Image (cartoon, rainbow, N blue to C red; front, side, top):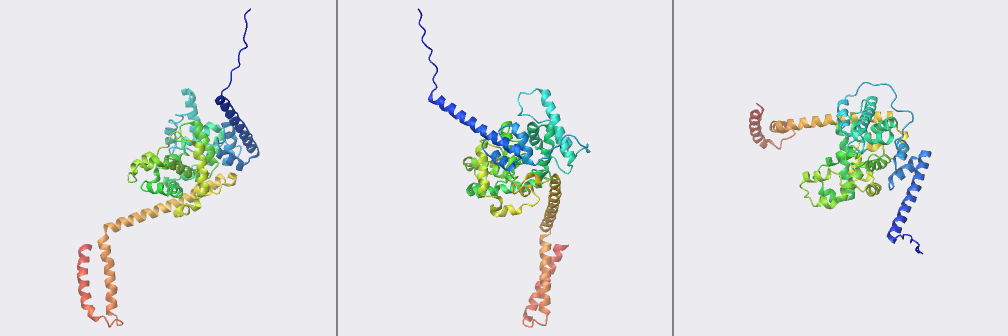
Length: 415
């Protein structure tokens, strides 16, 4: 009779057992967080959502985001595709050019027909927002932001979310000129100096325009993975607008060793390195460091009184402190828009006047200087002829000779 030995059951190695335990712990942690997220969404608890969005993994998945993002933006229900059909917007041609280049990296594996349908929906979404709020000026990269909202929320729900984002969170980038971006960029050196004076000094000869592509598009133009950009949006939508600058500062600091190897007097090389985000990005670590940096060096305490140079109508200040998002309306956003646009017009006009004056002075420097000196000589002449100056008669003949010589020189330059 053939004997059958019992089959030995496979044994797990300690490494396998440890991996299983870690996986189980991760699953339990995720389950608990998902429960907390669902409770916060059900209760409309924005404060809890903000805290959870900044923690590891953010809002976890798009199902949660579809509820949480509108809450974080203070969206109202019932605002979507439907509504009056306003006249075309001045930037529609550029919108179409950019939409044609959208959905390059994600979603993956879709047919050309499906991708074309998404592009049509994206174009419709952008144009609805721009037509409803025609004061907004489209910028290249706006479509990168909006396509993330479209993928997460769907077209109808995204209309109000993108409207509120545009008027209340990225309004500075949609002003009549790009001057609204400058205060954001000018804060970056101050944040860097507060966090790492040595690195900030090393980069001081490099203008902060290297941060523009990332901060202008909320990093959507730079990050090519859908899961990463959606997770980063969790954090940015839960934070004040200025936090985006702190995040870029953390990215710069994370590359300190590489940057210090480049000479400080090579700003072009530094700009080339700084204008591209490092890959891969450890977003959870960067987000944690950003939150810590923001807590340690809040905007009001940045060196050089950098924060006090920011307009009170900028989103940098109108989103600080991080109040209840429903307290600001779209009408508030439009009012801030017009005020800041007027400030920029006045500032630009003043700068043009100053530039024209400087050009005039450079062109007529010698005649103007001579004219000023002529006035001075005239005043001295009056003093010399005054009866209250009997103690200077001896200077009279000397002064008269100088005056005649100066007059001849002045005539030469003035003719």
